[in-house]
Length: 517
Ligand code: KIV
Ligand code: ZN
Picture 1 (cartoon, rainbow, N blue to C red):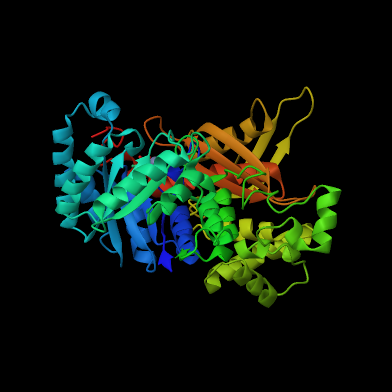
Picture 2 (picture 1 turned 60 degrees about the horizontal axis):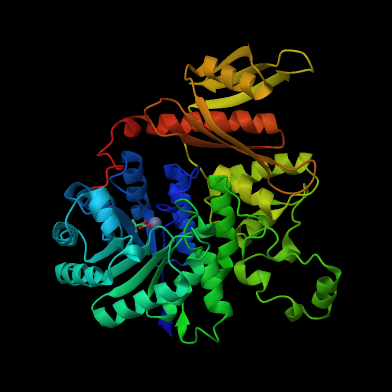
């Protein structure tokens, strides 16, 4: 069996999805889950982008041992140095450096000649090799680059020490047969001197098809993200590539991946819970409807023999439909722990105790506790951000034609502070009152509420995106409660706590990561 390397970039390109920023604690949780999933390489971030990114890559490097940890770096010394230092503590490490190779990018964005681009690429790879043995080089916009130039720059960077050549279709422009031809020509050209990798964007909805065609033509690494997150229309979805290879092993005979497919669904849920970005219901493999059979004819077929309409067994991706209705208020700690293990969570005794306590509170109020409730509960419990401010109580008043008001009690430094305020709506009143108590004035950029499971008594999962200073990036906060207003207040306070935990780091940027070079 030839192994196709799975390079996951959910934490880097995926984080470039609008609204998908994650804090350090969340990134560590995701990296640990990607390791359980079995990805070969985790692109943990772009170290030079911000001290927050650097810190997350450094912490992930210390935590993950079974996957290679990679940082992105533009072809410039300061980026490569930041990447090398951020991954220094990883057991297996890689620097991924890139520069654009299409004439459009070289002329209009970089304003560099092809010779200058080659020099920069070679310097970046040579410098990266002083930090690590494993260096990947990407020809940004390879999809629209001249293949002669890709060959020339590939020769130079392989000579300088790169062992993976990545050919991104950065703008998602290419069709499968075109990607296949490019990969075939490049695989034959490098003749085993480097691994050929692809990184396909989904602007024409072809990222997965392009990745499969690349594998059929010689690519031995694919870059992808969970739920297809990523810049603009996203990247190729990991779960779709992996399940296509597995389900159509008749076509892809002799190829395999190291992915434990039973971890696909738990990973997808974790990412959706943390980013607040749900896969579309009809999304292949992990969408809510991916295994739902609606029409009577289909249901009849399924009852007679599942193979009539089912090409993938839900349990193969870790979605055990039989087991979605779970625990109740009489369930004990052992059953709860067993459930967590089945759902793929590895928790410390302390985390188990506090999650169990919250589960009991929930089971007291909610008749049916589903797997998704437990996932959301444990995910929110495992985020170890210091609770500088903690919501103690909240009282709301609203009536048609009246003025919405909120009275809020918050604990800070062992002192409980209560205040009240009014607003244009209940949420406005709650957030303004929190601002008055804490002295921080947040600007709400985005607000999303999602029910975690079914029923009128479902848990509300609120995600907010807030800036506390115009010059600094927005911070994500999550709140979980049976009461939507309480979940909103918790999410807003969560964003503030997260901001305070990284305040110094946000202000001190290494470099401007929006500069092209
Ligand atoms: O899409 C792209 O070209 C990228 C590179 C940095 C690999 O994300
Ligand atoms: Zn990309």
